[in-house]
Length: 267
Image (cartoon, rainbow, N blue to C red; front, side, top):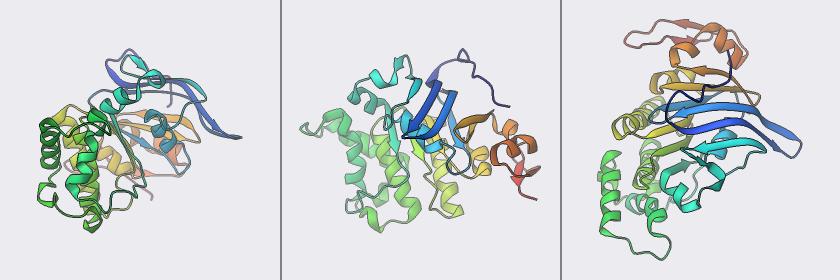
């Protein structure tokens, strides 16, 4: 089902063309062509080691491709200035170990760093952006609490609030629901979808659960052994043959009330 992406489909936040990544003797990604349209929530799915997080790190400029090119808007990703990029794109890695001793407001205020730098004064505009981010993520009542005392769902909302305060138009999230129970997964992914669709933001999110990806994302890109094996709307991906291509096991689907796509399961 994999094919070359039509790069003429419209405005895109990221365009990945012919990207490969090797680290030492290990080939992580091979000849990846993908389109990430602006204003959509796009999931990266696939088995462990498929290259999802590595691709997200390249979009975040944490890794450089061995070959190929990545564009953000009209600009080559690796040639944009660091501050300009940080004002446009915000990245939340999978393992976030810092900030646990800060208050929520202090953590969210860190999102303003790209706008004033280490020696700049925290302005009235910065304070307003922080207040708006706290409100948008529904953590304003926890603004004075220490981050380390929050529940998993509250903590993830606080980190997402920091990205919103950054005023970035594109959010890159690496498995933000990995350590959360089902209720908090739905809470966080509902928030991400709302922030994207109501705020006109683009979101690229790494997820393991294909049903969660289908429920909350507009588009799904699937990787397997470093290559793109499927790409499309949730209804296109949630097909037995396509699911087998992605995960290498037999999966079935059933209709789901109130959803526009089926649910996948292992029979």
